[in-house]
View 1: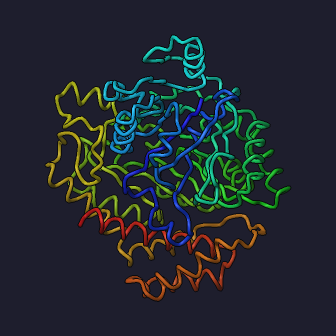
View 2 (view 1 turned 120 degrees about the vertical axis):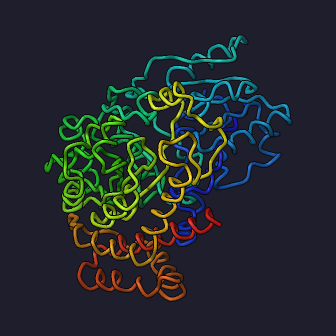
View 3 (view 1 turned 90 degrees about the vertical axis):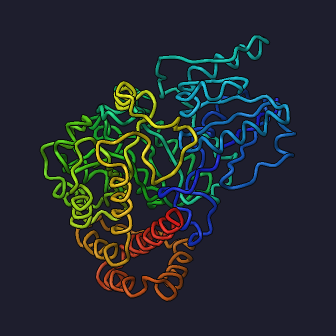
Amino acid sequence: MNALLVYPRCPDVFWNLKHILRFMSRKALLPPLGLLTVAAMLPDSWNIKVVDTAVTKLTDEDIGWADMVFISGMYVQGRNVRQIVDRCKEDGVTTVGGGPLFTVETESFDDVDYLVLGEAEITLPMFLKDLELGCAGHIYRTSEFADIKETPPPRWDLIDVNKYLCMGIQYSRGCPFGCDFCEVTKLFGHRMRLKSADQLIAEFENLYQAGWVGSVFVVDDNFIGNKAVVKRDVLGALTEWMKKRNYPFYLNTQVSINIADDEELMSMMSEAGFEKVFVGIETVDEQCLQECSKVQNANRDLVECVKKIQNFGLEVQAGFIVGFDSDKASVFEDMINFIQTSGILTAMVGLLSAPKGTELYNRLAAENRLLGTGVYEDDEFKVSFVPKMDKDQLERGYKRVLSTIYSPKLYYQRMMTMLKNYKPRKKKTRLRLLALEALGKSIWLIGICGKDRRYFWRPFLWTLFRRPHLLHVTIFAAMCGYHYRMLFEELEG
């Protein structure tokens, strides 16, 4: 059996970092971790090939070689997934769909030959067994969650890791919280499921042996969902491995804001090599937090929480949302002020959306407020439901937040705020050719040729002379600002 595993391209959105790739000579941000893990579950006798369409084109020869094409994707990739499915169908090649998009939007892909839904550790063996017996059905689904201690490590040998800016590793699935707009618990549950420490360290070692040195994203939706086990079993073992390997990786992950309540946890994560954490802040309005059941963020000083996390050597990246029913006219200015005061450089501000199956989706559907299907809609600036605030006011305000926080003057101002708050543990880091390339291109494209060159040099020189060990942080931050401004101009124009 020749199995072709195809990953769709992401549209141009703020978090794909496409403009940063030109500084780093890379093709894509992250590899298709899910497909590489699925590849490890397929029979050893099969011939397997992976095509990530963000890195290389899907050719007629690729499809012609395949007996079966496996396709996975997320909601935002729906349009590209549709194109790949249609192309395979035209060529008469058997298709297999799986992953979040197919699981949530099953009826939109009824023409896919086989739908292997939910967690592949459970449904893929069912499909493979029936396929071998010649009696495979159309849909395989389960309401159960897998024991990820049985999940095999991803097949890094199927890709060229040097085509990517960052690698991904998964430690856990699930989240203990219940934000009404979030589909994570619908897909993966509230109960945290964890890999063992030995299993996780083995995956880091596999990645290292595959030749990777650089950034690694621990892709968990909430890495600290079970803080006790992370502190007791994982971080100490990870620190020991990182020290043994001379810290080959820069680590980042996603956490909830309650990390600020545990100084020991923050210190241990910094010691283990974590440099960035993404936190869902969403809104600074207490009424909106109650509306969306974001209880973990309520009744706390969020600015102080962010600064405390930064003080422990973890740069805070954060998600923000506008469009809640309780949003006031002041929400846009309040959000701008919070982002500037806290020094959050990467502020992923988005319009509220309602993924199918979430509590928010069910409520808006019951109120007859949903607009369109949402499956192939990827307009960053259009709201997908009838908001309480005037729709035009909401969309204009959203654009104003983005254009303001990513204007050169304000962006570099909060870069200085972040750098002064940010106090990582000092460790010896390897001199990387990729970092030198990015440094040279950044100085030329931003510091000399860029529109924002007058703002670039203050944080650059401040870091160079006062905290030279943070130079890679400053350079990457400058590249991120460049990316966000360029992409905003493209999307708006």
